[in-house]
Length: 177
Image (cartoon, rainbow, N blue to C red; front, side):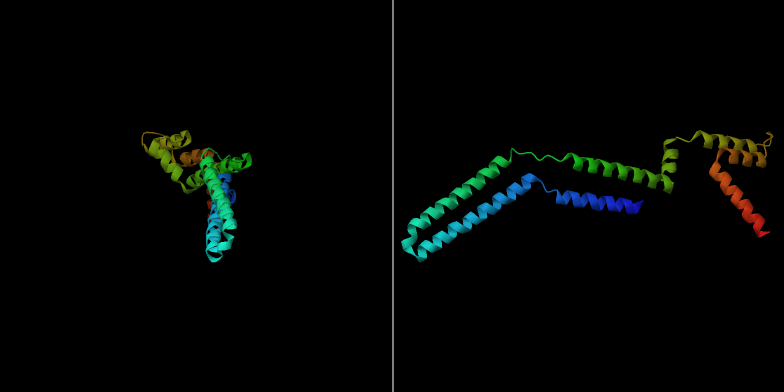
């Protein structure tokens, strides 16, 4: 069960990291364009200083770079109005993984016995356990006719797991004699 939970966590992590948001990709591309445009602008400035006769081309190159920088800034400004949408299948995977984790957590609580302790703490004791406790109290009362054999018979009749364990213990005892 724990191994299954680990695999679900790994799958959820991979899907979350692989499913990078479209707005993030757009912002990264705009940053990349802006960075290249700044590099081009600096290159044209260096080229103009090294070769003054290229001032016309350098001026045009810097204008294109400035336009690219302005366009990237506009993309960033417009990006604030864009909202990511999760595909239906990714949402389904998240819900299934959450449900599986909840079921696994419940099973761990149940199998470890913590759930029984929590039920007792809240005050919810199953009816079968209450009837067994009442029978045990009656068995210990000297004014009542119930005996320990009747108590064991009642326990075995009410709890099939206890009955199976009881029979197994009897078989082991007979085998050891």
